[in-house]
Picture 1: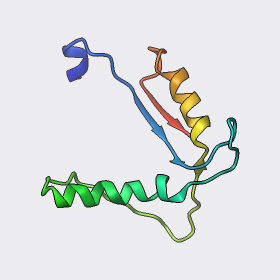
Picture 2: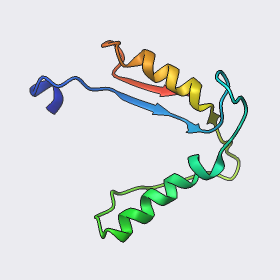
Picture 3: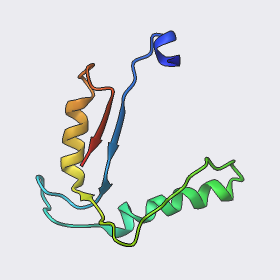
Picture 4: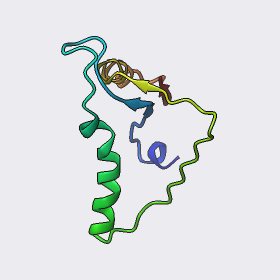
Length: 93
């Protein structure tokens, strides 16, 4: 509502967990230290800076599965979604 009131374009694009490549070379390479650990590094830096952390709740049932999406696939989906004004929210998985 605030964006519309101020004439600001907006989109919410939610990719799944990103790792590896499917389309571009090097294919199927998963740099775990880059993709997964950066989430933890983000929260660690927030604590170190004594920045007020946003309320974050993670709940993962024991019988759930993990949806891991190739980085290049997600990037292509995002680059195609951004110019489309009809897409306001999209789960990329």
